[in-house]
Image 1 (spheres, rainbow, N blue to C red):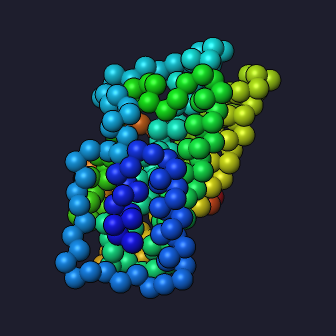
Image 2: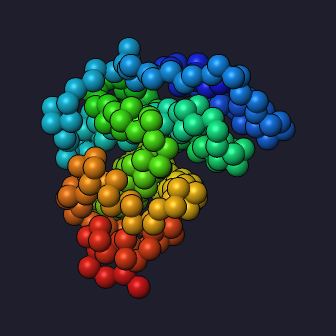
Length: 269
C-alpha cells in the first residue's frame, strides 16, 4: 500500500491519484496494514504538479478582482483548484509518512484525499468550461513547503496543515462566496458558488479530523492543546493577519472559544 501511496503522491495525473486512493481506501476498510521492517518514507524534493505548473513566489502571483471576464474568473478558479490539488497530496502524505498511526487515522486521511480529489475535479471541469486548464496560471508551493517542514513531526503536521491552513480556508471561503454573490446570475459564477459551498461544508469535517488527531497526539505526548500556539509561533504563523475569523465554522471544526479569540475574533460564545 505504501508503494501505491508513493505513486499517488508523486503523480500529476488526477485520474491516477483517484484510482490509487480508492484502492488504498478499499484495502484499509478490509485489512490491517502491515509495514515492511525496512520502510523509510521518502522526503519528496518537488511537488507533484511541478511539471505542469509554473511555480513562483506568492508575492509574484497576479491577483485578479475582475470576475466579469472568463480569464479573470478562471484565475480565481485555478487558485482554488491548486489548493485542492495540493491538499490531495498532503492528505495522502499524512498516511504515507506516519505509518505507525492507527487504521482509523489512515482511513480518515484517505477519505479526506478522496474528497479533495472530487473537489479538484469539480473545479477542473469549471475551469475547462471557461476555456482553461490546470497549469495555465502560475502557482506557489506553500502547502508543499508546509508538508516538507513538518515531515519529521506529526504533531506539527496536524497543527499546521489541517488546523492552520485548512482552518484558514474556513475563514476565507465564505468571504469569497459573499464577494461573488452579486454576480450569481452569471452561470459560471453560480456554478462556482455551488462548488465552494460543497467544499466549505466538507472542509469543516477535514479540519475536525485534524483537530481530533491533534488532540489525540497532545494527550499521547502529555502536552496541553495550547501547544498549538507555540507551534504556530515556531513556524512564524502566529502573527499572520486574519481580516476575518469564522467563529461558527471554527467551532464546528473543533476550536474552542479561547482559541478563536486568540486568533483574532472579538466575540465567541
